[in-house]
Image (cartoon, rainbow, N blue to C red):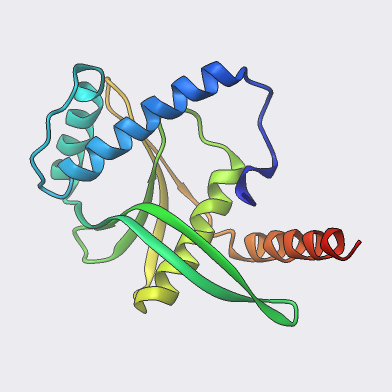
Amino acid sequence: NVINWFPDKQIPADILDRLAKYGTGLHNVIAKTTTGQKTRIQRKYRARVESLTEWMKEFGYTTVHSEFSVNYDIPCSFEPRGFRGTLDAVVQNREGELELWDYKSGKFYLRHELQLAAYKLGFTYTTGKFITRLQLIRPTKEGISFQEIPDRRDEFLNLLDWYYKIHERIATK
C-alpha cells in the first residue's frame, strides 16, 4: 500500500489490531447512520456517532456517497498507473458544494493528506463531479475535531510514480 509506506512509529501488532478493529467498527456505524440506514449502535461508538450526526445537522451537511470505491488509471511518467481505494464520505454542504471527508478515530498525519488527494482524483475521474474541499473528521465524545487539508495531488502523483518505478526495477532483477 503506497500510503502506508511511512509508519509514524513502531506500535505493537496487538495494539494496532485492536485500534484497527475499533476504527473499522466506527466507520461502519457512521456509514450506515449518516446515510439513513437503521443500525444498532454499540455503546462504545454511540457518543462519537451522535456527536457527528448532530454536527452534520447543525451545519447543514448531507452524505451523498458513503464507502465509495474508486478504481482508475492515472497518468504518471509515460504510462498510466492503476490506483484503487474506498473513500469514507462525500458530503454536500449548505452551498451545494461537494466535500470529501475521511473519518479518523485517532490522530491526523501527512499520509492522510496524500490519501485524500488520491481519493479526490479517483472520485472526479469516476463521476466527473468536482470536490471543493478535503476534510479529515474525527468524531469524539466531546464533539467534532476537523481539519481542512490542502490538495496534495502533485505529491501523491509523484509518490505513486516512484512507487511503480521502484517495483519495476525490483521485478526486473
